[in-house]
Amino acid sequence: MKIVLSFIIAFLLVLVPFPDWATMYRPDWVVLVLIYWCLALPDRIGPGAGWIVGLLVDITQANLLGLNALGMSLVGYLVNRFHFRLRVFPWWQQAVSVLLILLLYRALVGWIRGFFTTSYLDFGYWVPCFIGMLVWPWLYLMLRDLYPQRKAR
Image 1 (cartoon, helix red, strand yellow):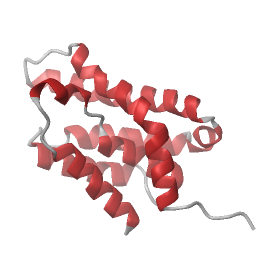
Image 2 (cartoon, one colour; image 1 turned 180 degrees about the vertical axis):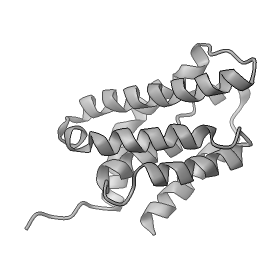
Image 3 (spheres, helix red, strand yellow; image 1 turned 90 degrees about the vertical axis):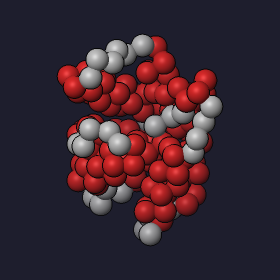
Image 4 (cartoon, helix red, strand yellow; image 1 turned 135 degrees about the vertical axis):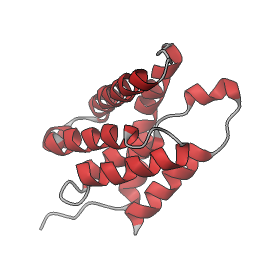
């Protein structure tokens, strides 16, 4: 239930209207929450959950159906694949790893979107990745307190 609630809050943060000048500073909240849950519960959250959440993002934002689903399933796969390494990184190194994952996600989504539209990728397209890197340590701590890890026996 806590996982679903955190995704609902992330969806609400995506849907909150921003002024035109501030929209490029909005981090990819849903992707960040997906990264956290793939790190915290890799046996329950992974590429399948990324696909479902990505489809919901596509529906709520009226995007090409499957665009974000493919990107988020790739994010789920990568985080599940490397979660043992990512978990032991210090917070700043985890933030840099999250930046790389967000850049890969944005590159894939922008590349696919480029096939179907005439849009181009300017600097403003990449800014949410860097904002996400800055937000990651606080989001990680907040979600970790929401769902504490199992204690070692």
